[in-house]
Image (tube, rainbow, N blue to C red; front, side):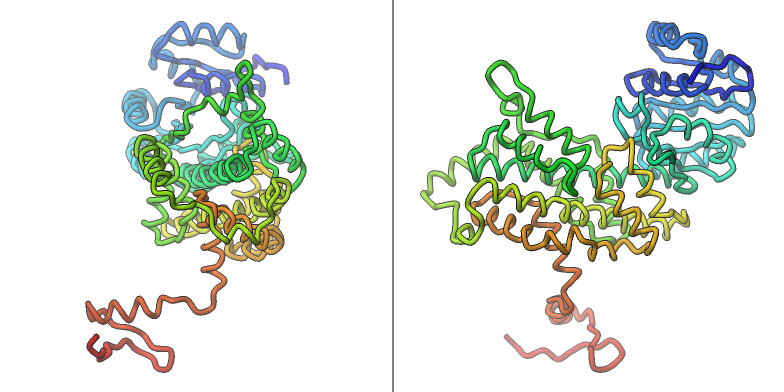
Length: 476
């Protein structure tokens, strides 16, 4: 699209011109927006404005940025989450007028967004939280945007951001999630699911590497074989690229330290699951797996001590499982979409619970539709999730979808083989336990409730009569 110069074209102030901010600026300009740019690094703003052309101008202060924007002004923050957002908002509010808007496009904690929205509202300014997924490439070519804010402000700003968003079947992946922190909450959970899917792929890689002795190139060929299937995804593409990379004669993946970093959204998701009382063990296990990966010294010591005991790490459980790497890869191709769908169920159930508690009225089908392009979670699986939620908005119904029904037998073989060979597959195993837990008619929790009454007189309910009771328990 050509860059219009008419004053009627959308105008946006952009603060923070790092990789994401700069690529979003290029995207907005390509889609017809006029930009006023500001960064604490003046040279960065000048260079970006020169590259963008007439659609952008660099400013040397927030005063100049605000003065360059027509009313009602819109300022888009692409600064690091946490105190920098508070500092930017505090600096902007005295310079803005009622009816103006500030948008936080970073990975901010959703309760911080709610607090900031209340602060801005007192000055008549809208504060919105937009979760943006797709990384640097998505920022440039079209991200998925999970928008949170008051309906009137979203209606005014939507055309500008819909133009810059990724598109699926001609529909912009711009989801109006609800007021306050709804957009950042949905993005947080998106990232929590992302943690789980990445860990699933790491577990598949580990099994093919350690149980079958395959190198990166051979594992990559198995991953290539999943193209176009329900196991395929953007994250699988990322894994393929990692496995294909070389450093001289070595596979680059073999030279990467096995410690996975994190920026907090996975931890926030796990904490939110506890806060809202939603079982999301698989999302939590993915976070814990990263924590274990960082305990490298302890892992090395305990692995050396275990090897010194002479105790075998394999068991008869592996005997009933397919023995060749091709058979294991085939089982993984069925198990991964099943386990991934369960991770999505947990995340969507968390979004639903928070939406009810906060009064956000989030449309789960719209969320899934917004994840079909641009975002890190895009996959063939998302299309099925979106269609199913449109027909029945209860995420728990997804446990009956074909990827789970058809993949469970292979999934059990994968987990049994891994456990029998002492390979840690916490997300594969947790997701399977979640599925079994929710498809078990009679759990063992009646014993737990009985024990609670034994030691704490907490009371119990009975199946044969109404009310709450304390029992007389025999002595041990």
